[in-house]
Amino acid sequence: MWGKRDDMVVHQVDPYNAEPPRRALAGEDTTPVDTFYSRNHGSVPEIDPDGWTLRVDGLVDRPATFGLDDLRRLFTEHTETATLQCAGNRRAGLIEVRDIPGEAPWGPAATATARWAGVRVADLLRHVGVHHEATDVAFTGADTATSPATGAPYGGSIPARKALMPEVLLAWSMNGEPLPAIHGAPVRVVAPGYIGARSVKWIERITVQDGPSDNFFQASTYRLLPPEVDPSSAGPGDGVALGLVAVNSDVLSPDDGAQVPAGPTTVTGYAFAGGDRTVVRVDVSTDGGETWTRAGLADQLSPWAWRHWSATVEVPRGEVTVLARAWDSSAALQPERPEHVWNPKGYVNNSWARLHLHGV
Image (tube, rainbow, N blue to C red; front, side, top):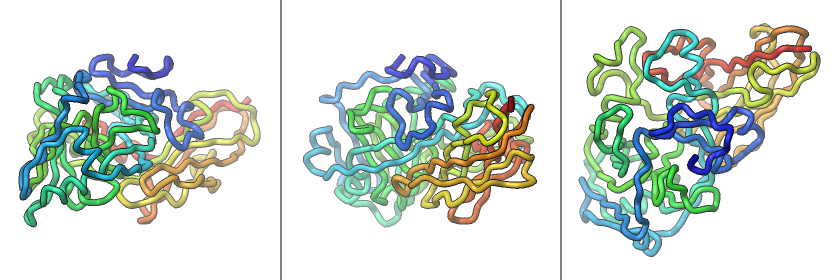
């Protein structure tokens, strides 16, 4: 389906929501398109690239409408390697603590990295002239949300200061190939360092404004609620709007539950920190955190990309839990347990990674 690999873990068919098995991400600096996770709130819209237009309006001097040829003619193409991560990544670990009804049990592979090419949002904004009182830039997609059944177009916003940074793109290419329909063709937003929900697909409007988007998916969803709150009774603006990705990591190989020979075993995984932070350290333990092995960190392809890591640890005979934890460049450390970060929407599970192995 949608050109994806046969072993994708499909959480929902329509809207299509799926992630690859964790091992498919192991050792891949960039993620093949057929392996890249997909998170959608509605059916994939059918858009003719020749008839597609993008409206830029709001607090600007010269509102304008652009076609695809206009973007290519007026602005220089740029490429960024960036990791996108769903706010619900690793939700399955929170569901093990307490049920989260109505939310997909995403594993650790709702995250992926690609080389994105397109034009800078900042170049468009400078072209139309942004008013000094502008604080946010809102994006609206062509998809209509059916999950939840709002019947409204999908949208969200990022701060204007972020939108004016050179890494934020209107992308039409992914890993050197035309952007696939399932990933937002003909053009999507890529906002590196922010939760994937802010990288709006099938973009058709950009609005410069003096406050965050009031779109349902910014005002009422993708918000971190306190554990005691019933999400069905929460109103617009409740909780904390999610934006920058919190430092996170997980194990990609071996598979969870795998049998491995007792003795030295190589464990690999990824770590990622949003904003302009980078991952600076990953530790791995097989004795409940009594002792730790420092993992080796692979080179980072860009400031906006994950880092793969690898460590060799001693696996005893019998059942063992492998723990992994990461620090970012602000000295933030992942919280220890999923109980400490549980919330009623199941967002931002960045507790220590836990992998169960059986030494034989």
